Length: 224
Image (cartoon, rainbow, N blue to C red; front, side, top):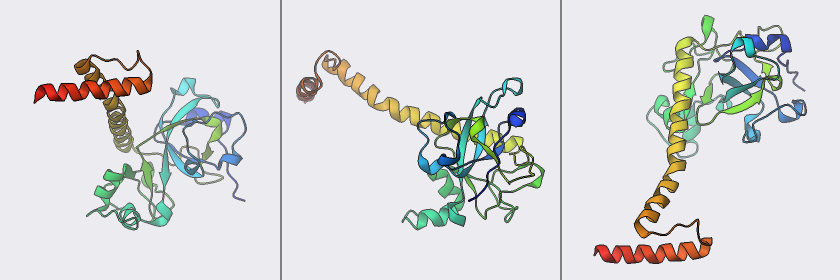
């Protein structure tokens, strides 16, 4: 069994946005430790990047931090990973952008283009490394372990200031896009209500749907 080295209470204040840590398997995280309910099982046992966290003076072992999940795609580039699924793109950068990932520099490919850089010339240990910016999760600091194993400083692997900015911009871009998608059905329903004069909140669902459909048909006929 792989041994993970949890973040100690005294190390919590060293964590900052851009710090790369490891999220152990679900069964190796202490009970009652807060984990985002929306965090899927596939997100565990992966490196993670802290996207946001409380100020240094407020950071505690029990504090909640926002993380983004990282993946190596089993050592494949995202372009080849998607190609195996029949999704083809001209370049790796385009493939990552379309899929909602940002590539992170690795020690085996330190000069790769369009990647998030780490401080002090560090690189991720796998041949390929990406961070998923489509969704982030909130977890308790106590759930996290250091990336790199025993003897490695808790903040040894951290993004550069420019890379952190790029990461946050990527996260906000998809967050805004998701809100637009979620808001669209409500906006469309509101528009239909305004045009038809029927509020689905005041009648049972089936009746509302039937009346709404009838009103919409009448409305279309009036436009002919």
